[in-house]
Image 1 (tube, helix red, strand yellow):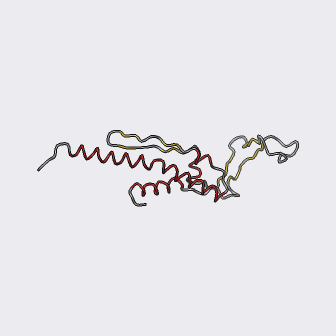
Image 2: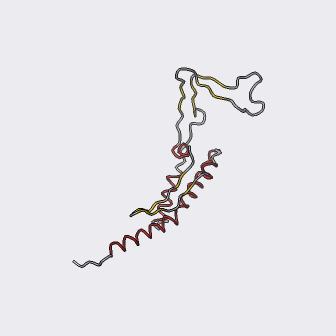
Image 3: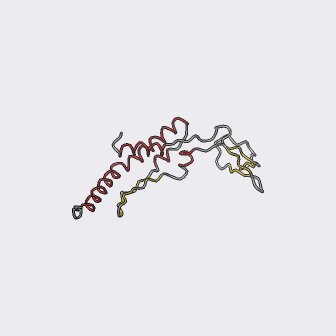
Length: 152
């Protein structure tokens, strides 16, 4: 068997260089693609969730050993929209549930009305049907993955 000294090491470094270049080239694409998808989702459903697209953060590309990575982070509560929320009932345990009514719009709270509302249960999403799943991140991962493989 013939061997070429250093061939495997050189090949490994070339592959890691190519992977690092691909991750660097497409890292921000994932943030942009998912942000655009969340914006379109918000428009379809009448949601004010611009904080998601505005709050996406990406890390620089890191190379450690035989791994190349970059991190994309979405703001807290993004998963509620990404995966959706089925209607559910909040049930009080012990004391009743209390919801603060801090700054109601002018004229919406009758004179003498309490500053909080109490209930034994609340059917959240019973009128709206909950929150439909956006699939913005999962779809963006597929789109960017295809682009990184040269398929799109």
